[in-house]
Length: 297
Image (cartoon, rainbow, N blue to C red; front, side, top):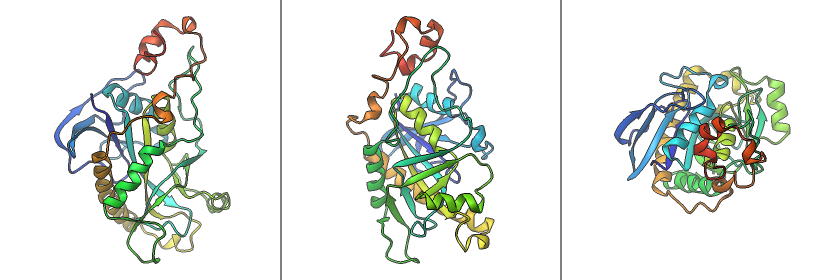
């Protein structure tokens, strides 16, 4: 069994330190994951890596099969997921190449599949605190160990820093925000904006997997006066630098795992299933056994 999962976003398509590599195609009741899982050893720990957008970055955020991705990790035995995601900044203090470990979400997606349940089985997990606090703390400490100073930055031109806490706006995409939307998110006090992580976090909670995001800031969103001067070449260069930083942070975090799972993630389904056991279709019990087997025989 592999207890640590890694999801690589835009720019992070591999983990250079991963050894003893093996590609594993994991069938799920929800279809195919984004790509084969790459299992191997990282800092002495067994891990599974998944390229969120597929090999060659060919899957739009709205097209991602989030359920298959998270269910695949569950079938591998994963209990911790470290996710890396490219984001835009909604605040001056969060500069390109900085990292942010968010602690909240704001949902601006539309109609994405965000639950394993339904079809005769009702469950309502708690999601007030959408990220695993202990795992996020591990990620923050790992960023410091990788050489990033904690915020506040000493100057606007200083080296990248890591920020602890903040709200991630998850938008539908694939287009970026309008100027009116970007200004509104800033007025609401949002911190960064991306297109992928919310559904992963919801499904990880249903799967009782600890989940944390390392948000990699590529540029300022369109509210910023300098936005129109940003070029594709600049964004790609920042993506590549962010990917290098993320590999170091994730490797440092993996070295600090596992921890005692006394967090709410570990038992999220314990009191969440509402449907009477005898009313759950037998085929569904079998299909979702990796999730609900210990609660519904």
